[in-house]
Image 1: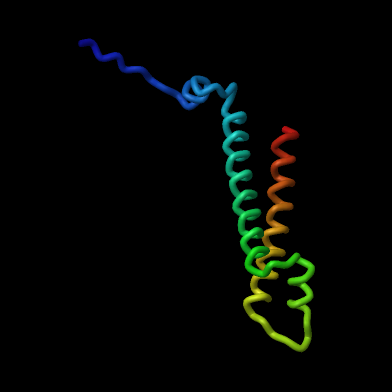
Image 2 (image 1 turned 60 degrees about the vertical axis):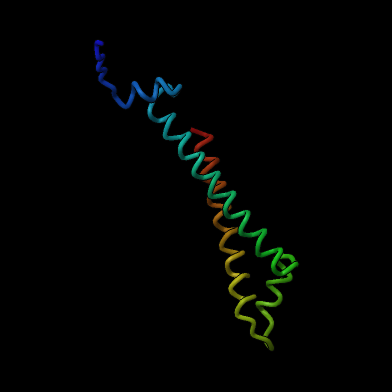
Length: 100
């Protein structure tokens, strides 16, 4: 039996996978990573929302209340805000990829 050895390059592999060039493959990979991050952040927000059964504004009111300290609520409020900021960044990054 004859063994056919073929030499591959990054470009030939990407072309075989349907990408016209390496930049298109990189864009697709970045898109998948960013969509995964966004979904993760959204799921984390839903968990916090379900845990407290309230809106971000209601949790903010607890966070800003002067007469009480609830470290768990404070931490969750700050995490919620962080996730919202992270989603905004991911959406801006997705828009940048879509424009190129």
